[in-house]
Length: 181
Image 1 (cartoon, rainbow, N blue to C red):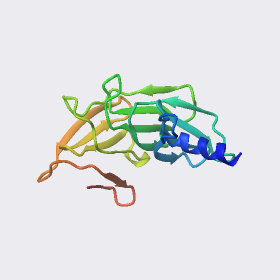
Image 2 (cartoon, rainbow, N blue to C red):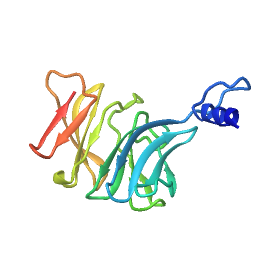
Image 3 (cartoon, one colour):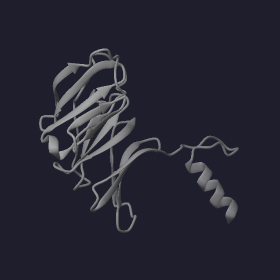
Image 4 (cartoon, rainbow, N blue to C red):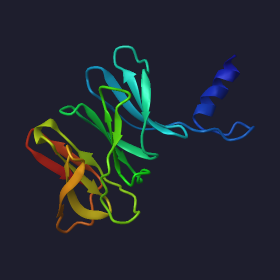
């Protein structure tokens, strides 16, 4: 019936239906490999990266990720999806990496940007033109972090003059510059 369909839709959004609260479904970011999959980070009590087939829209599977996925970045040179976590995962990392070519080959990084339990609120940026290097920022830290994507560790950090931190980060392969906000 139309009423039960409406109730199911409201339940999936985490709304109160008179009989109690339901787990809501949040989606934070979507990215694609432009060939086979669209990846979406979702949280319905358990955070996952859902794999959607581009040609059919079907979901062949999902892999777990940190409890606070906030940003996805597809890195074509390594065929991987980098997931920025707003809070540290159980291994103390702010970044997770999932193989884009297989649903069973997820692996977590151990990249930490701060020495305390302050949440990481920045962005990472990868591009094939940068080779094995990526960059990350943190809203509460005046550094640009250089990440070794092979070793999955911070290689270097450079202090950004006259800055308390940068939340947004974008790289342009056209001019080879990064923009931070």
